[in-house]
Length: 99
Image 1 (cartoon, one colour):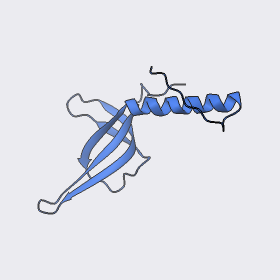
Image 2 (spheres, one colour; image 1 turned 180 degrees about the vertical axis):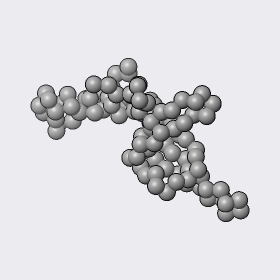
Image 3 (tube, one colour; image 1 turned 90 degrees about the vertical axis):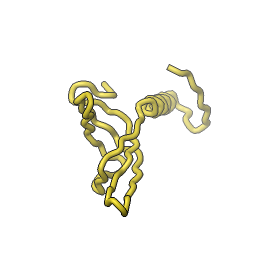
């Protein structure tokens, strides 16, 4: 846990301050779990989608939230790939956020 401070005169009630503090903490927590995945390009995948990633070395599967997309087309070989910037959400049994 890393302490941080943000001052703003817009959030005057205690409840608004608590919600904003939780939102900031959630964004920081997501930032710690960001990664990039390179895969075959699929035009159906958009920002804000959730994708299931099958890790071929360890055979684990996790669900990731797509935050950014970069595509690459090699016209000589016909290879069309995309790099997804994601953050980890979890799997069927272990979710990144629990209530």
